[in-house]
Length: 397
Image (cartoon, rainbow, N blue to C red; front, side):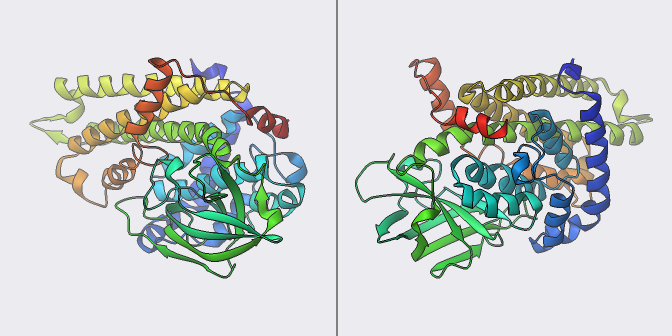
């Protein structure tokens, strides 16, 4: 069924990327999970191999490939079972860098986008705040024009790559009026005076550095405002579609891997004179889980295909994340149960996968927020129309 989406070139890319991960990443994952710090040399290795340039223009060092190379990239990183490592990579590549590509000036693209594709620079995207969470409109961080500069004040939290990144893409209100849509997208260098960050201690995603960031009269040049002044809210809303689809793809991939691992365990584990995969109740639940995962995977592939054709998929991306993360959580919960006491042990992969998966229904817009967005579309007949999506497509062609 999925042959319509993947060519022989895609399959070769999958094989090559899987080999790269096994050789360059897997041997270090346990250390990175313990320290919460990913070695910077792996970023350069990703860049040298072109893995940060999959969906970016060739003039900045990218490969300008179709979206199913990205799908493969995401799926394979879930197979190595470190949600934190995967998040650090895609938060850099498809959260921070997307804003550079779409809203950045040519000067910014030449320095920051090119450096991000090569792996010499690491970025993060700063939206969530301590008092706002998923409510982007409640943002308190401000950017006030002062001569040829903007002065940032406020704080951000739950920021992936928030401690060790080289630059930050910051969303801030551009005036003090009660207007949630008057926002800007700003590029801030890490070493700018007044910027500080502290690492958060998380339940899962332990390999990634998740930070809380403070801006105390942080002064940045006015040419570090990206895109049109006051349009930051719209940029964020439209890029959310890609983020939510990414999290949906991550979810189906980790659920698929959990089932694969569990089936292998069940075929080897003997109880009452037969292997676990011979017990009817377990067999039927595994069959049910496999069907659920196959359904969301097929849906996610179709949404990805539509996005690649410049279809605005805000509704479908919300559905992808909502259902995929819910199903993945339940599948991994059940798979851990099938391992019995061993599933609860850290040396077996289900324990980490269980912790990492729990962030799925929370990050990038909680399930509750997504349900309300969908309710507005389905019940209230609200239409979300793209203002920047076509421009993003033009920049990749």
